[in-house]
Every structure is written in C-alpha cells, then in structure tokens.
Length: 530
Image (cartoon, rainbow, N blue to C red; front, side):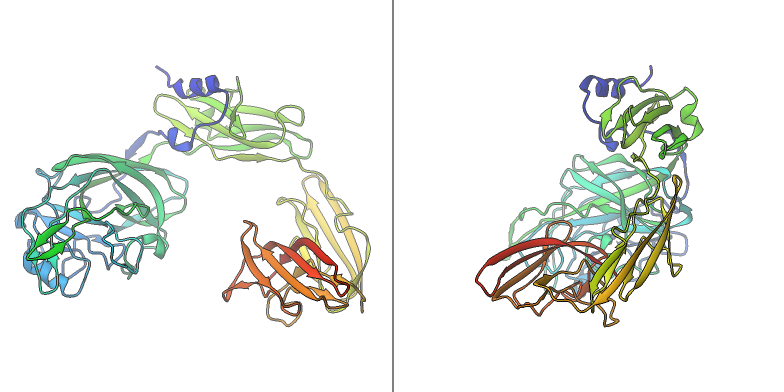
C-alpha cells in the first residue's frame, strides 16, 4: 500500500508542513566505513579492561573525542570489570573517576564494549558545564556532504554493582544506567591528531552534531537503536556518546559509608556493534527548470530525475502551507499564481519520505541607474560615505576602480560609478561627492570602517554646539544592547570586550539635551565595514 498517510493528513489539516524529522525515511545499503565496529582487541594486546587512551590501553581504530572525562573499555576476558588497581591509579590523577555498572549479558557482538558517562549534578562548583565522555574513530574514506546515512548501534543499560571502592582520597560508589538517555553522533571534517583536552561536549573543539536519539531500556538489557541523518559537511571522523544538552539531575543514590555521606549521581552506558548505512537515494532539491524570475514566471522541478519517474508521490508547499492538488514533479509559479515565497517538495512512497530544502522565489528587476540616489551630494570633511548599490544576491557590481563588492566607501571628492548586472539587464549608476567643512547641529554618519587605518575608525556623533546631557546606545540585529556611552566625545570602535563584531547594520539611539534645555531623541542605523 502506498504511503499516502502523511500527505493525506497534511491536506486534511490544511495548515503547515510537518517538521523534517517527522518525514525522514529513506532506503539504505550497508556501508562498512567503521573499522572495528564491535571494539575488539587485536592479537598484539593482552586481554584487559580499563580506560581508552589512558594508562596504555588502546583499542584498534578507536580513541576518545575528549580526554579529561574517561571512556571505559570492558572485555569478556576480564569479566567486564575494570580492575580495582586500574581505577585506583586513575583516581590519583583524574577526579572524574567511577565504577561502571554491570554489563548486561550477553553482549551484542564479540568480546568488548565501551562505556560512556553522563555526570549528574552533585552540588560541587565544577569548572565545566557538561561532564560526558565519548568514543571516536577516524574513517578510511570521507562521508560526503548532503548524503543520507544511518548509524545503528546497541546501548546497554547496566545494573548497579554491590560494593564500593575506597581510594586514598575518594569513596567510589558503583554507577547505574537510568532510562531514558539521549545519545548524539558528532562529525568532524579533519581527523583529529589527538583528543581534545576538555571535559564534556566535543562541540567546543569543532565537532558538529549529526543527529541524536533518545533511548529507553530496562537495566540489565541491551537496546538496538539508530540515528538517521543528512550530513551538513564532509566528515572523516565520528564520535558517539551522551548529548551535550542532557539536563543535569539532583543528587541521587546518597549513601553513608564509614561515617561519610557519599553521593552517586554519575551515570554510565555501554555501546557495542556499530553499523553504518548509506542512503541509496539522493536528497531531493528544487530548481527552476524553465522560465525567468525577471519575467515573473517560473516552472519549479523537484530533482533528481528519480523523483520525476512517477514511482514517488509529490506534495508541494509554499511557506510551510500545503498547496492542495499540487502533486506533479513540477510546479508553475507566477506573479498571479502562488507568487513570491519559499517552496518545498515532499517526496514519498513505501520506502521514502523526504522534504527538500526551501527554494526561494523572489522576482527580480532590471538594475536601476538611480540606485545611488541623487547624483550630487555634499559631505562633511573627515567623514566617509557608504555608496550602497546592493540590489540582490544574483547581481554583479563593478566600480570605477574595478572593485566588485556591492558597496564602495568614499572618503574624498569625485565622481563614483558602478555598473550593475543581473539576468534581467545592465545599468550604470553614478554619484558625485563634494567634501567640505560643515556647520551642523548634529551629524551622524551612516557607516564607519574600524580597520585601523586612522580614517573613520570610530562611530561617533558630532555636534556644532555640544549638548548638556548625552547618551548614545547601539544595538545589534537581535536587539541586544552592545554599547552605551554618556560621553559625547566617545564612540564605538566596532568591538565588544575587545572582540571584533561582524560586518553588518547596527541600530543607534540618541537621547540628548541641548544648551536651551530641550530634550531630543533620535535613532537610525549605521553599517560596520571592514
């Protein structure tokens, strides 16, 4: 039976498109890119359990994404227990030490499993906000951006062991594996030479979250699960472990041991038998097959060709709204039919349910020679003027000096010209600037260039007659106040706490009282250019 239930439910609701993760189904084939997927020791290493990349224990092809939270290794030949001597030695140099739960039996595959940890909050002022450990590996070949993949793996929920372990400085209580727990898969473009010297989330070192899954299970059992994902970048290394967004918990399992109150809110889970799969279809995308944005009429088509074969059902959306009866691989969009907006196509059959990225349809116009405003402008000496010719992202720009940015910063008198071109046509705009000494009540520039050349490096307000009271505030595009000053001679240098802020438009607000005692409030925008 054809998988029309998602499309039918959308049509009946008549409102919005479902989230992508509600329609994320694709056929896969085995992709053996993970080496040693069951964490086995080779013949050159003695049988042992311990901590990966700590104290001499190395698992072929595997390491840890971060190195201050210990990742454990437990092998059948040692009874799936890290020896007390190993734990005690580790505790002497690492405060984040623990006793792993009992490994559920039988294990899914082979003789070895890894243990990853998610620390709960215990009231102590840790220097780091997340305490999680991971296992990671470099891949023999690159997994490619925008391709579809699936990682299947097993999660073991361990039961608490019976006995505690006393070291010189710590009393260690056995861990357990609460349910549920969320696991994340991370990716990295360049295989790291060594683990990150941090506690917790690999994102601090540039690892990107590829996908997550929440897993539930009873203690003493293994649960098979999977993460389906579309790669946002090329990946040559992966890491697996608890999500960075795990909510801390209150102390649990408080014990009295030798007149000492001992907490145990540190959780560990076991991983085994990883298998990667690769999607056997390409992710759908929308393109213009015919027509022109200049003529305000286009035909959109969902690709690749497989989705045009009639074996896949199609549903179109505009701005998240279902377009009723639009099930063809192509969609006609014109100024009078559907109009401008963001278009997506959902493709679906028994084994596929995918939604394309939004495709923008915005009508284009031929460039205008009046883009720079009036042809002649008088400017105050010492300032600079931003000549902004931006029309749309598809246009090209050529200024009188050969530069090709959408804008030009002018600091001296002269005539400035720009040639604009897009698929709708070509036009030339010009502007003559005359710099002269000015008399003004108040002057606020429309741009500044904090590039260290000594010219217009600071954004400041100028007055002919200084005000009695003065306050200037500057806000970023999110409305967050990033600068304020009560000194009229002070200005903003484009930084926050010494860190350069990005190029873009910022909002300024003035509140000042002139010499006559009249209060004024003004606001506007300034463009930061580097």
